[in-house]
Image 1 (cartoon, rainbow over the protein chains, first blue to last red):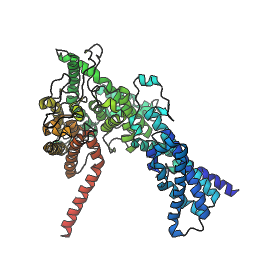
Image 2: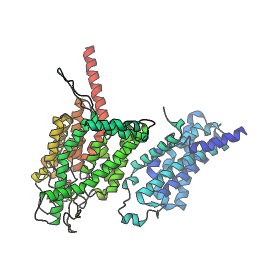
Image 3: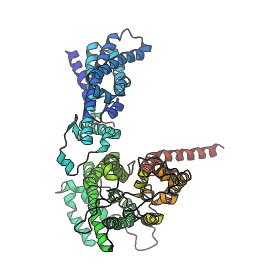
Image 4: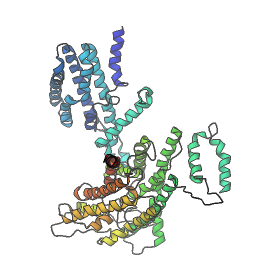
Length: 208
Length: 403
C-alpha cells in the first residue's frame, strides 16, 4: 500500500509542486524555441514524454549493470537512440510539424530534464516507478509548453492550432497582433508569469 | 493652504486602519505627501542651512524640464499636419490647440494606466505611493509617434510598469528605464504602428480643427527615409519634409521635422538640458559624454562613408540633431536610477551610449534609430561598469597601502 501511494506521488509531483520547468528551471531553451505556435508545442511535449518514459524504463532495467564511470555515455546512447526513433516517426507521420521543430527534436538529447531524471531517479529505482516518473516529468514539461504556446499563439497570431480565434471585427476595430509574443523574450516572460502565479499559490515554494 | 491642511486633517481618520476608506489609504497618503512634503520650514531666527531636495522635487523639476519639449511637440505636430494638408497660413494659437488636443489623450492614458497600477500595487503591499511615474507618464507620449493608438500605449505602459518596475520592487529598483521599455515594447510588438511614413503626422482634423491630409503624402522621419534610401556612389542623400522640401541641418536643429512627438527639436531639448543641469538633477558628465561618444562614432562612420550604409553619409552634426539622439542623451541616459553611479563610470556609460546609438543607427539597416536600444543596452551594463570602477579603486588604494 505504501508503495502505491509513493507511485502516485512520483507521478503527480512533477506536474505541479516539483515541476521540471517552473520549479527546477530546466529545459528552458526548448520552451523558448518551440512555443511560438501551439501545435509544435504539443508535439514537442508528447515527444519528450515518450523519450523520457522509455529512456527511464530502459536505464532503470540496466541500472545494476551500468559501470558508474561510463554511466553518462550509456544514458546518452539510450536517449539518442530513442530521439532518433521519435524524429523518424515524426518525419514519417507529421512532416510539417517535424519541419517546424527542426533541430529541437534532436536537441531533446541535451535537454537537462532527461539527464536529470535518469541520474536522479532511474539509476536508483525499479522500472515501473521510473516509467511513472518519466511520464510525470514529461507531462509537467508538456503542460508548461502548452500553456506558453497557448498564450503566445493567441496573442501573437490571433489563432489557436492554426484556426482563427480572434474575430475579424476586432481587427477592423484597430486590434493588432502583438509581434513581441512571437519573439523568444516573451516566452521567458510568460514562463516568469507562470512561476509567479505558482509561487503565489504555493507559499512553501517561495524562496526566503 | 491652511484650509487645505485642515481639510486633510479632518478627513484623515477615514483612511486610517478601521476607517471607512482605509482601502484607499495609500492613495490618500500619496496626495497628502504630494501636497505637503517636505513639511519642514526653516527656523525664524539664526542662520539656516536647509536642503529639502527629495525625490518628489527631483521628479517635478524633470517634468518642468520636459515642458519645453512638450510645448514644442504640440506646435510641431500641428505644423506637420498643416504642411501635409497644404494650408498656407499658420495661426499660432489654433495650432497649439490642435497639438494640445492631439497629445492630451495620450498623456491621460499613460498617467491613468501607470498611476492606476502604482496605486493598486502600493495599496496591496501596504506601502506609500512612489512618485516615479510622474516623469515616466509624461515621457511616454513624448517618445511615441503621435498616431500611436491609445490602447497600444495603455498595453505597453501596463507591461513596462509591471514587468520592469514593480516586479523589481518599485521606483528606484528598476534595472531598465521604464519609459524606454514602453517604447521598445511598442516598437517590437507593433512595428507597423511605430515606424513608416503614416504614423508621425496626424492625418485627421480634431474637433473640427485642422484639415484633411491627402492620401498620397509621406511623412517618414529623416532617419526613416535614410534607412530605405539607396543612393548611388557620389550622390548626396536627400531628406525631405512632408511638403517635399529638403531638410537642412538647421531645420533638424530647430525640430520642425516629422518625428516622435517630443524628440524632434534639439534646441528645445537643450533648453530642458540647461534646466536639468542648473538644478543639478542630471549629471553633466553623462550628457557631455553621450554627445562626445555620438560625435566620435559619427565622425568615424562619416570618414568611411559608403552608399552601402546610407546613414554613414550624414555629417556628425546631422547625426546629433536628427532622430531621438539628443532626447535620449538628455532625458533618458541621465535617469539616475538606471545610469552608472560612480563618477568615472558615468563617463564610460555615457560615451558607450553615444557610440552604440550611432553604431546601431548606421550599421544596422533594420533599425533606423539606435538611441533607444543603446540606452537600454547600457542600462544593463551600468552595474558592471560601476563594479569595475569600484574594484579598480579598491585595487589602487590597496597598492598604495602595500607600496
